[in-house]
Length: 235
Image 1 (cartoon, rainbow, N blue to C red):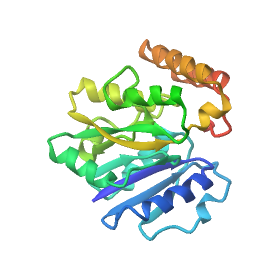
Image 2 (spheres, rainbow, N blue to C red):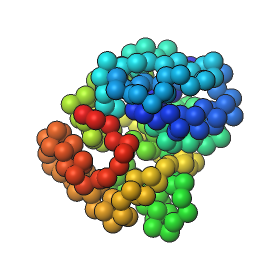
Image 3 (tube, rainbow, N blue to C red):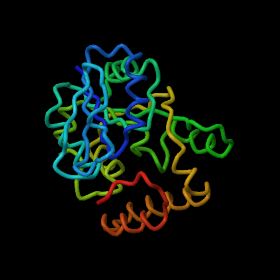
């Protein structure tokens, strides 16, 4: 079984759209866990959901914490960490199965944005191959649960860069992974609230500081100052 884990904080509209997509993916043999932050207040919990969807009300807030708590109750041997504002391709689960059957223990997806824009296409083009930014949460990590547990789950002290930190541990332990070249559709909302240059320079600065060991809480504060978005999880 595959367990799709979706951390969410006030993502009602995106969850509705995602449920509609999941209904078309033939995922009867999978489970979907919506890991809601303890400060969600937009009515997400009361959405009408497909039968294979379950809610987990977490005792805290932050993607790392929410994903870890959902992983603890997940029944699947494969964990898939999907953001609420991302739409998976039609062959999503088959792509994951094929990647693991090829001998990989984990993987990511390439993606494109939901807005037609030349500059955003340039950004997205880098997600189909290894690059400085590989491992970001928008690429939808999938991983064998046994490997996830062996690596110690997500670091809950990482309040912004939990995905990159986990990928660093994957590489350190030589976990075999594949980038599946079948695009997810990622929301461009961050770029709509900020300029293209502002987002890219901010991302470059944040990832660089992270790789040089800048403290997680200070990264969170810097992120809050650099990126304007109403969707940001509180710390």
